[in-house]
Amino acid sequence: MDANQYIDEIIQDVLTKYPWQKEFNQAALEVLESMRLVIERYPKYAEHRILERLIVPDRVVVFRVPWQDDHGGYQVNRGFRVQFSNALGPYKGGLRLHPTVNLSVLKFLGFEQIFKNSLTGLALGGAKGGSDFDPKGKSDDEVMRFCQAFMNELFHYIGPDTDVPAGDIGVGVREIGYLLGQYKMLTRIYAGGVLTGKSIHWGGSLIRTEATGYGLVYFVDEMLRIRDDEIREKQVLVSGSGNVAQYAIDKVNHFGGIPISCSDSSGTVIDLDGIRGEKFDFLLDLKNVRRGRIAEYAERFRTATFYPGKRPWGLAPAKIALPCATQNELDLDDATALVENGCMCVAEGANMPTTPEAVAYLQGHGVLFGPGKASNAGGVATSGLEMSQNSLRLSWTREEVDEKLRGIMRSIHKRCRDAAEEFGTPDNYVNGANIAGFLRVAKAMDDQGLV
Ligand code: NDP
Image 1 (cartoon, rainbow, N blue to C red):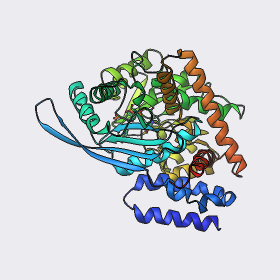
Image 2: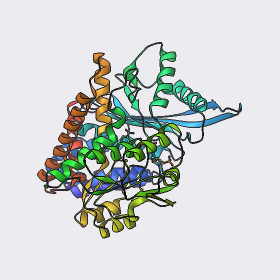
Image 3: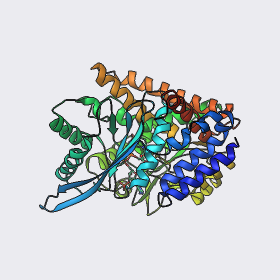
Image 4: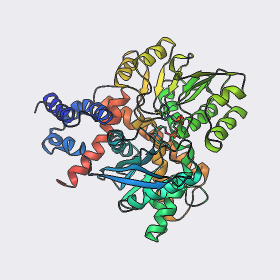
């Protein structure tokens, strides 16, 4: 078996079959490149066609979501659920509401989720879903009617032991509440464990809201600590100003670092004085309560400047960069600017925010690079903890959940590092995450036979 030739053939097949699914192809190719090392050592996974089976989802559900706006107008969106793999446990992965949502984006996210969930060590399969509905500018009532219409179809395919969706871009505690309410009405069952990211007042887990951002910074802390370095007093560029960005900023402050930026789709705010204290509280209120635009931060605080239409990466020097907004938001030019400005660590809070050329450039210039499927896995790991608490019908304290989250991020970091080293590419967290994530899923698939 020539491992390289075998992988080349699969890559060719993916590119020919789905030429229009650019995001999915990007995610699949990254994993397949790392698999060259694995197939050489485990040719039986090629004989048993594990990779060919893994790149095709178990199933994809596409449906119509009809809902009524506040003026009585009829609206229609597309709804999706991609159930990728349940080799390790029930399908698990978030729901995204954003106008850019399409099958390619959700297949890439669902595929990544398989490896991410495997890395957590928990019994979770991989999935993703959502809709091209744009929540921006919609009233609470419109969001509620949309969520109810979305659940009218989705409820057929999910359940606490089948498929457990959570939040993602555009889906937070408000949307999860409306979705669970409708699920309850349709099934007449109070199955709290069917969705995670619930309000802490009725079945949610403490720290779930903070988990992805906190977990990301715990991962960075591990990357630096084993190299006798630390976050303290380092300037940190963060993109986005949603759930992940907010709590990454919060945790950077806890570690004594200086978060100097945040952004949204209209531009970037740079605040060299650090986003902390009263300014951090303002950010939370602006984005979570008033649902306003990030420029308001710079209007309110004199220490800050707003750069319309810009991304953070070239705007100020920083040792650490945390892309926390969306896919492909950090490209080769951005990577070059980061390196020129002395950046030594990039860790992904968002899913696949760094383009392949940018990843190669950063790694080639000695920048530590934490791929999202490892560094942002704290969210789904805490969703796993929420599911456990729902099953046990009890609630762990904030400290208990935070302690478990930190332990899980440490284990994920170690799994990635050990696998990277074992397969001859030390310090390459991309290979480490792909290989460690894959090996656990591949073993399960092999044990479960040809299905
Ligand atoms: P939110 O909806 O809370 O925030 C998203 C942020 O990213 C907003 O600031 C938004 O700005 C910005 N953004 C979204 N799309 C674009 C775009 N096309 N161009 C520029 N900016 C954009 O989402 P989350 O914080 O939950 O998710 C952010 C990322 O983290 C996503 O990649 C998600 O998949 C990933 N992730 C999330 C997890 C979670 O637990 N929530 C878990 C693991 C990963 P604007 O409001 O202007 O659109």
